[in-house]
Image (cartoon, rainbow, N blue to C red; front, side, top):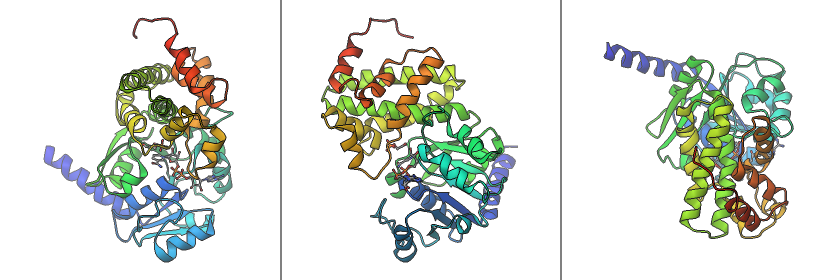
Length: 352
Ligand SMILES: NC(=O)C1=CN([C@@H]2O[C@H](COP(=O)(O)OP(=O)(O)OC[C@H]3O[C@@H](n4cnc5c(N)ncnc54)[C@H](O)[C@@H]3O)[C@@H](O)[C@H]2O)C=CC1
Ligand SMILES: O=C(CO)COP(=O)(O)O
């Protein structure tokens, strides 16, 4: 019986890729570009169209196959093209990869609601919680489009640069529709990318959003040069806080200890490629947040998500000293050293 399952999966795999002629990618930043390239490498005649806002970058990609603003050291496969036209980008696409930063997603999705067919699955790779509403992308998408839309959420330890460099990567595809999760597994899985599946959308989204906030805390510890003991203790505490909140919100333990949870926490807290961690390092070194953000053209989603976490802690009545301290530092209510002092002098507790 086993060979029939393997045969069926292999047939399905060919079927999904075989039947996919075009994928549109919303957002031509580093990860939109990387995931578009990952798809383009799967099939030479797969049309991967990046929807950008910048006509100059668009021209560079179409003429020289280089995204001159993000990942400019990489030549993109010839079946990756770019456009600034919503209609041209979406026409004929069977899947839409959504790689627009969370805080800009609602306005973007509202702008395409009338053009994107309601049966085209959106594969969101954006990690964060919407300021003002506290919504996850799985809630923002239907709210912004004004309708239900098939959706999957791809998350896990996946630095864009390393995906572009074909370094082995593991992610998880989450969808309330198990078949769609399997389809995403087959669309993206390759000798360079393993794709797990789950129906735990809440767990994958919450872990992906909160790990960015924890990464800022890890960067602060690094920037203050507090040492390995402090880093390990902080990340362990942050893992507990993410577990406490995620479980209250309905996440499965397997998700929290899986690729989108522990996997991405380790990558982003310890990996120097992390933008969120880098923001924390500079905060720890005493730089002002506005100067840090002004010096980068890349998003650090944890900066906006941190404030949302404070509201979630209150709503779910869960104490999150590390994650909420990040919001205090970002708001300028505490400096990095004061935040560490506050945390170190909290009452001693029993581990849970
Ligand atoms: N870069 C990475 O290694 C990874 C990023 N992600 C997630 O992917 C999502 C996209 O981030 P990146 O590709 O890293 O972006 P990026 O940081 O490389 O670039 C920022 C992107 O946001 C776009 N943008 C800025 N303001 C905008 C607006 N008002 N409206 C529409 N678009 C706007 C820019 O055009 C650009 O495409 C984020 O949620 C991020 O957390 C997930 C995994 C890995
Ligand atoms: O989510 C990511 C890797 O999985 C990227 O992390 P940063 O946004 O901190 O760079």
